[in-house]
Image (cartoon, rainbow, N blue to C red; front, side, top):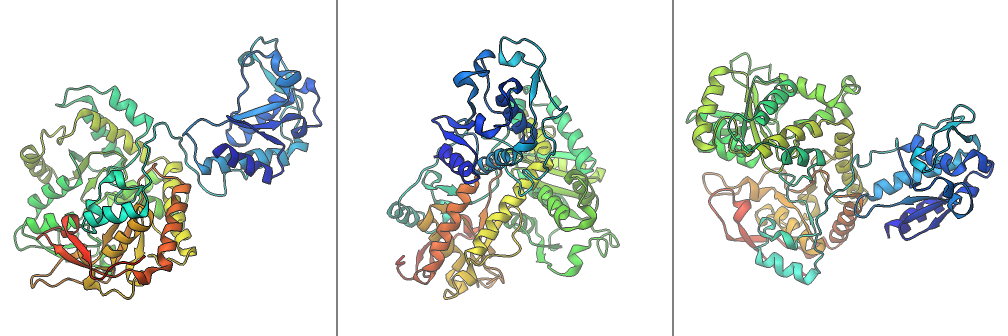
Length: 547
């Protein structure tokens, strides 16, 4: 079907081509009818495709075969299996069509040697260059994946009745679903990244000595250079860094202001005796207004710092021409340290980081790390994980990758908006947030509309999302639900994992559910744990669902 899709895209642009079993063939005589055989039109087509869009068709074997007869008629575009996405196919079609549309400006090639095999042939352009004019519009319309798929994981498509049973067994909590019953998993972007061949190569060639390995020293040097902090302390994941920071920096009864907190951050700060206060006011956006004046350290949760740097690049004209790496370095310079769950932006499946500039504070961090995590040069990580993290940092700062990553998420948001589905706007970077209050206005917050919506999405589509509303917020000291202003369902996008075809499936399924939203009722607890209830709580509908 992929081959047929490429053929259809080319035919729609009037490109002369044939449909094969391994790919699509471009008909040379119809593609470049003005060139003679002595001008090697088959090789001209191949060269132009590479010049225009970095595409390499297959021409190999004996050179003479391609000069006349059957061998000279077709340029084959053979598609590798499980390697390219729909966006890649659209790029291929655009490049081929652009070359074809400019065919009148294409000159021939003259042979400079007498090769026996294709790879020995050397040409030069008859008119000093192949294309008289050189269009610069290809691939500029939108970012496409700057990578291809090397290893893939099969995913399971279940029917609706199976999903209803699975959801009931999970207590209407998407965290308790078994992953093999999930088709598209938008539960989290933590530890769900598809790591690169560059990362796997580093892991394979790592040394096994855990103490003060070269991988640790390389990681420290790389992160010091890019983040700008003197002390770089690895941990096994982000919540370990949060725990150590909270225990070392918070005194019982101390107020801890934060903005747009993550649930484990708040929990660790309260476990250390802190009184968490959520401050979403203008002052929260300028740490030099109050914090430095009073000697209060500013510690970033820098888990998604690379994506934030890309948003600055997109939205602040003063940074439009700066690299993401340069923006990130400046962003970090306004704080005194940070915690990072490296399982997000830095594209590893295990790893965290704690960083600061204060020597005494770093000593306290490392002292506690020895007790809770492991050696100070490992943070509880294997050297393989440390090398994967260092290389993941470099992967994450590739401007083509991060531009594609952010645009992919925003495109999903725009498609949902076009379908009439209420979301938080404008679409962001790592996730799309559905507005459960607007999606299910008939459900009171004490019946947990976001939890109900996440469960209903799974039943309708097989897509797993997560609640970010009343269930996550918890209860106050009097046992009452907080009823937060935002009642959201998060569609969290793993990095380098899903394609546009997957996203279209998600959009169609959620649109379908939105049309029958009145058939969804609220939920009630049948089991409510004391802390972090969104992980382990179990529910049942207050009234039977009929969709």
